[in-house]
Length: 149
Image 1 (spheres, rainbow, N blue to C red):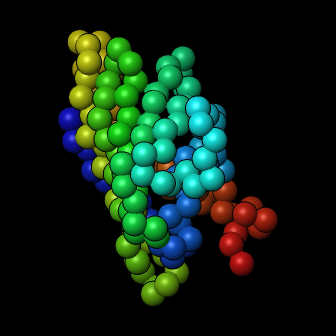
Image 2 (image 1 turned 90 degrees about the horizontal axis):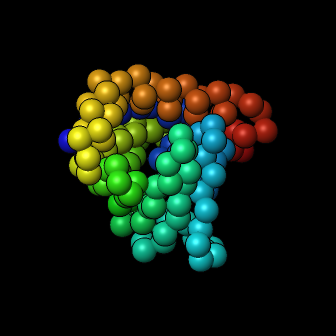
């Protein structure tokens, strides 16, 4: 199941990029705490592995590729449930140098019948899911100490 949508972030792509990395998402995603089985300096380096635990499930992530400030992609597997990829692409938007149009694509395969039902529900709510990302990022950025200089 392939799902694609866009949000707008009030930062230029070079600055917004960090928000879509394993460590960067910790800033604005409630409950997001990536665990790196091997210490890494650069969490965007292709081949980097990390795990997240949400809603009682552990998901293993692998950075597939990145173009700093422009895109990052991940493979992700939630054992016994679903597997696939997530790709994030950033491009300048609006007033030059001030905003980013961020396209987020999930391409997921269910591993069970129950997961197939859950993915259909996820697909139905995908636009609202992305709206919640945009709102969470804007709320985080609205705190003065979080806004890049």
